[in-house]
Amino acid sequence: MAPRLRCATARGLSSALKPSRTPSLSAVLLLPSSAARTYATAAPITSGFTLPSDYVPPTKPPTARPSDTRKSQLLRSYTSLLRTTPLILLFQHNNLTAVEWSAVRRELRRALSKVAAPGSDSDELASKAQLQVIRTRMFDVALKIVEFHDPSKVAPTTVSALSGEKVQVVYNHDLSKAAYNAVQAATKGDEPLPESSAYAQLSPLLVGPLAILTLPAVSPAHLAAALSILSPSPPAFPAPTKKKSPGYHEPIVQNGLQKLMLVGGRVEDKIFDLEGVKWVGGIDGGLDALRAQLVNMLQSAGLGLTAALEGPSKSLWLTMESRRTVLDEEQNGGKEGEKEGEKKEETS
Image (cartoon, rainbow, N blue to C red; front, top):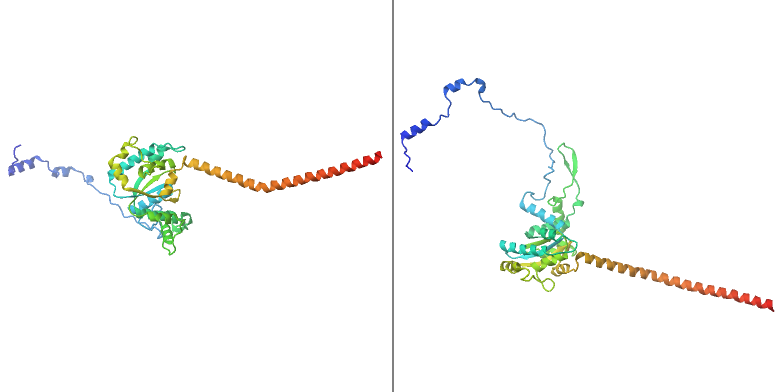
């Protein structure tokens, strides 16, 4: 490519070839006066409408902490998880890499999909089971809100609507001041929490980095499959063999599982330790078999109670019936003796 020459002649030639941006004088003179451009300007709106001083937008209720931060949204997700998930297992983890997490989740999903529990949709349970890392501090606060905050006991607040009319509105969401005050009143006192409190039982486990396994239903068969992958303990929960599950024995999976430790669980709002979680996973036949055993036990107890209550009345009835029989025999025997005596007198 030839070099470009920068000279006055080239600049003059380029300026002559470019069209002029300014219209010529003849073109300006030919334009009518009505063609001049005019721009509309918005007049300032003068209105006497003002919002009431105590007006609260319905889409943004008052909160005790900023509602648009990531921590607040994470807190709301944890409270929703605790209210809607019946089975949660707690694990302590130690610096698992992203590849190790992915490998462990893959083997867990594969093991859950092979479970065929009676009366449950295994595919749906396997697809909705989640193993996720949580923020320990946020999860601790969410557990306090779920246990100590009762939305039905929050009193309504009087605020003004857009029209200025006073209306009653209840602010009982998880970020409200009512939830914050309820938690502070329950945990900031000098008296310790009762031992029956779920938070008092679970708070010692909320230490260090944590991960949770959530299942959308209480299925002992799926729980046993999850324990055999994440926390194997033969003979009740043996790890899968290399022939059935070769991916489980890969080094990356084994390295990730060595960094996981099961510390407890929450099943139907009840707190279980490691042995309790294993007991739930070891129920033969699932919850249906457990319900059948409970019904059988109640029926046998009811039959025993019925027999115990009917025993005295039956014995009393038998005693009275035997006495009546004896009296009837004595009465009939006396009448027959009188008749025989009369017959003897007539014959004599």
